[in-house]
Length: 131
Image 1 (cartoon, rainbow, N blue to C red):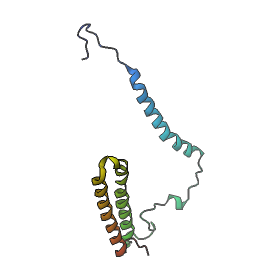
Image 2 (image 1 turned 90 degrees about the horizontal axis):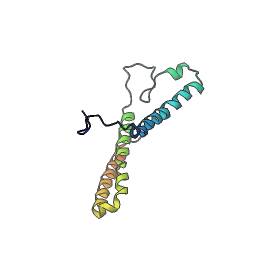
Image 3 (image 1 turned 60 degrees about the horizontal axis):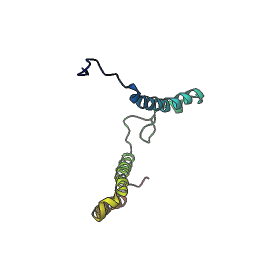
Image 4 (image 1 turned 30 degrees about the horizontal axis):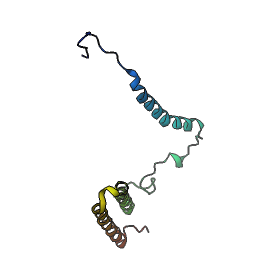
């Protein structure tokens, strides 16, 4: 497949260029696995019923499965994720602020104004209140 036109032989494979990739993979596996193995070996193992019980969604797991639960927990979680993701747009904007100029600055100010109006609306509606 990789035959040379002059000699009819295959060119030698240069495996030295793959050494950094192999080292990167090995170090990544080591950094990911070594703390878990050390924690398992050195950490205390004292299980009890409280530690082994499942914990879900901010309410007690040992009640009736058909009970009514508060939806506000999910609402606050979704609002946190929404605003957290919107704020993530500020990082690339701040880095490229000199390149995008005044148009980019005012576009982000409009974006932030819409975000603040939405936040004030949620606050006034009581979506962030936890009773």
